[in-house]
Amino acid sequence: MNTNTTIIYITREIERALGTKPNEHYIIVSNKTRYGESVKQQFPDSVILIDGGEKGLLGTTDLLGHEITKSLISDIKSRSVDSSIAPSILVFKNTTRVETSAKLLNCNLLNPGAMLSERVENKITQLRWLGSLGTKYLPPHAAKITKMITWKGENPFIIQWNHGHTGDGTMLIKTFDDLRAVQEKFPERIARISAFVTGPSFTVNVVVTPTRIILGNLSYQITGVPPFTDGTFSTVGNDWSLAKKLLTSEDTKSIETMANEIGMKLQTDGWRGLFGIDLIKHEKSGRIFLIEINARQPASTTFESSLQEKARESGVRGLTTFEAHIRALSGLPIDQDIIKIDGGAQVVQRVTKNVQAIFDDVSSSLQKLGYNVVAYQNTGYNADLLRIQYDQGIMESHGSLNTKGHEIAEAIKSAHFKIEI
Image 1 (cartoon, rainbow, N blue to C red):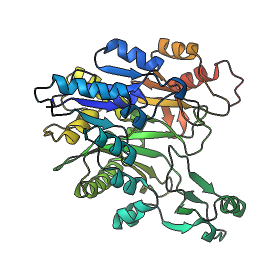
Image 2 (image 1 turned 120 degrees about the horizontal axis):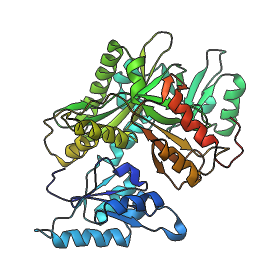
Image 3 (image 1 turned 90 degrees about the vertical axis):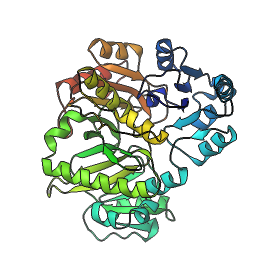
């Protein structure tokens, strides 16, 4: 990257910031973890790790307000030609708390505004923000107070709360008893109800600039596959290889049109940098529906960019998705396209009822088999435990692992736990 100012990426999980290599103009501040320390060994002067002590892993706001971060900012300012110019701050997902903390440090926060991000991601306000695009691209839907939802013996439908993460907060209602259970627990909560659409899901990362909407590479979204998660709707990874097999050229054009129209609407509202959309292809009609907008840097960005860097080493020209993100946020021109990739996949083992931790020997065995492994120190249910990455596909078909995918699953199941799959 070539920017006029230093960028400090502040993140709870260091993997989010590794879309490009740390250097004197791109510094990462994150939690002190074993994986973080392995990254710091490679980039000792450009990675700052903070020990949260009894607090455990610190969130973005706590890292931002930490004395070590304040000292880093002061040091960068003192070494700058113009000491009044503070470094820019970048985070994975902006919030009002992050904005307040950055303002107190007199630093420029590169991320788009938190209010716009909230308006777009919130399942309820998103309907109004999308307007006619919602009618055009979402499955049939409505917003209602939970107690006002009626059961008419119709087909199964989906209830979603205003916020969710990787499928949390999404419930499939198949019977009157399913609906009654939700209503008894959350009678006054407003929900979005949508027609239940079955079929393979996909995701694409998109970069917004003042003049362009630039699409990344389409990936198949690995969802609800055991042993990686207990949740039917939990996203556990991406497979860029399978997407090419399941989508026709017409499907791809439809997705590109949808991404461009949503991107232009964000562009008009002042959005810059990355966002992502999740889609589903109806297994009967073949129609492509929008299922989610991620108004932030999508989690798949880092590995997509890693695959793109490998392609560039082979002579392919262009920018990685993360580089385009940084340039868009920094107001730098983008005169190249995003690098296209041929394949690759990643899958995340989440905290489940049977898997609460991963022993080192599992990570080591996966690495010996040729996989890149990122370990997390999370304990919350459905949180990330292990991210396994491979330069080829791991899915045979929709919902089914191929030989490599089964190899990963067997390594997980061979951990020192009694696991029933």
